[in-house]
Image (cartoon, rainbow, N blue to C red; front, side, top):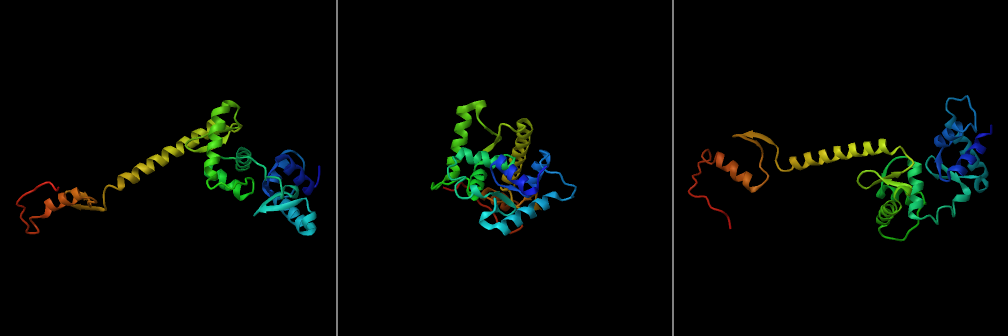
Length: 226
């Protein structure tokens, strides 16, 4: 067994990307690197790393990459600068452990510094490279497409994830259909046999034909507008 600081270094070296104190602790316990009887070992891990950074400054093994996440200081300046789009996607998907769209993958990669690009549409480049890799590599690709514009890793339990993605897409399609249906009618009025208020010319004409007598208007002729 080893202490929290050494355990954090071992886990981060092995994973190769920033992790939260909870993730580091979970991995360390599963690999039997640390043993603790405390009820909140992740808090102890986070506190030890924070104190190490605060006390040692630039001499600390660690740095805070973002709120709640830690990385190894040796990564900070040049670890991710040479990452390709696929490398960055692999990091992001491994870290998040769930399917993401190429827009989401790109945004996270840029935010965490995994990806450096001067292109104006990096998300398009990300999507194109993932699509191309899957098409050209087939079963040898590290990536899989899960639903419309979502990607995951082939190492995951793909059948379960794919089922969840398809279910979600069906729900989104159903919701979109209901929205479209609602957009062709107005608010409920229940007037003269008309359930909903009209939203177009034909609807207005129909409503007028129902009430013109009550308005004292006589229709002499009906003709098509040119």
